[in-house]
Image 1: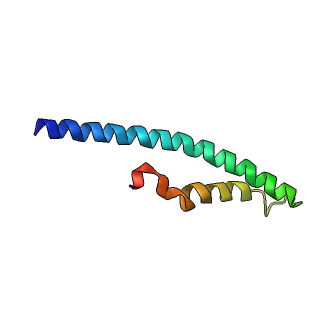
Image 2: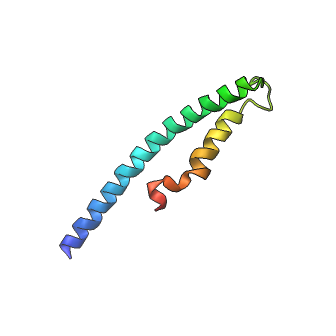
Image 3: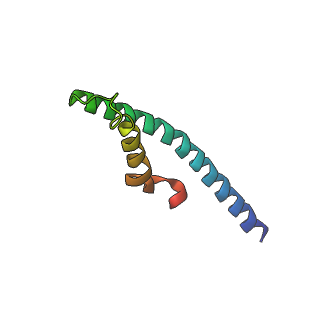
Length: 77
């Protein structure tokens, strides 16, 4: 029984580490995607100061990281 407890603790620790790495990477991914979306919209001649478009790069980045590729999150496996 003790070995099982140790293995469970080790797996939880590994999972926690993977989750922390994913959360750190998630912030970086969102920022990178946000900049790319800003570049795309600017290239298309969109005015990013327009209230209707102001939050679009952030929303799109969030959509990609949280929804479309959210299954890559180790906590969801």
